[in-house]
Length: 507
Image 1 (spheres, rainbow, N blue to C red):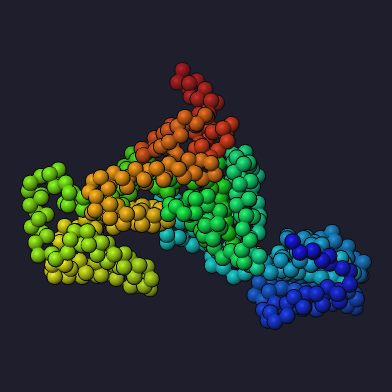
Image 2 (image 1 turned 30 degrees about the vertical axis):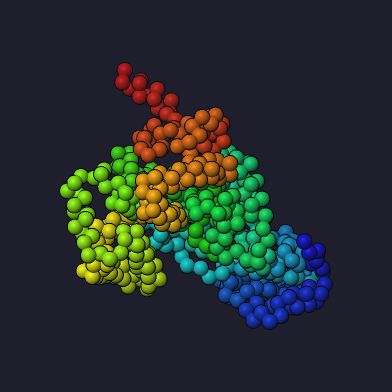
């Protein structure tokens, strides 16, 4: 770590140091000013262009500050700066030049006063960012329509808006040697395991990187099993989901310049659940959850099982169905394995093209491309109609998985099951399932089994059995997940006072 340089009382020395560091940066303004009676106090204002409001406007806080200091003596100016008697909301004295430089580059105004040995950071509006809007990646059926933005301060405020308690802690970190990106950990102090917090801090400090431009870089550098295609950190752009998980004892990691928050730790079940599971009644929530799990199985297993059945195990199907399959394949010159691979890759190409196309054309390219390619391939006897149906159902099932990163993992392993089913039959499918479940059972997220709560029910103090494939009624979901400390597992209890009053009324 480089040795830090203190801010001196000599304004000229400080100005030379800052001007040398900011040489060639046309967007960084160094504005000399005079304060006090007769301009007796020299001041240097340093800021990034477009991050600080106009300093001369009387209606701005900074403008009023400079006007009020015009009639003060040098001693009164120093005293006002030191004691913050002007009541600036985010004024903070910084003792070193490096800290002052980082604060200025973060979008704040930096004031250097002649005769004062600290730089004064004054909070400002910061860098331009979009306003709070809805999120496109997580559709909202019920609940808040607000989504995270690229400003970490705004995102923190959106969580604080939902959890108005001082037990909600906000811890600031910095990552990136050159980007100096601000990271924020949001958690409930009484609920989170201290060991988990320490592991998260160590994971962030483990690597030294030039810049962190998105939370995805932190995700890839800190996950325990970086070879696995399965995500080990849940992502979200919804503040209500982040607040909900904080109340369950998890940690939210926010990165400046990124609207995507990381939820730590994470288990496989978290990627299959959605926020509406808590908001809707338990009957419909359980039904939709079962559909999502069934779609997850179809997304990676359907194509491989189809190849295994028609190629090796036709006896398990009814005779009429086998004859229908055989009739649909008449005239197709390719084996079933190549036929399915061709259609799978064609659908992947259509999917990728739809994502990269402009918004007005993305939906059109998916529908038109799928219809044209599927119909033309069947008409030309390149593929059978049944193969198109199987591949289309497999692709449709993948869209029902709520988390995009989890969907990508199943899209990849699907090709492994296609090869195993097409070459080894059902033996290959069973082998693939054995390897898949073995891999998932081995994964952990901050020492929590990845397949919780399907495994690990014997963990002491664990009582979360009511939120599995079927969601229990809300009044029966009394316990927090395993993420919360054991002494704080109860999250719902009946109000005994109200219960006693009700009995009294009944009498």
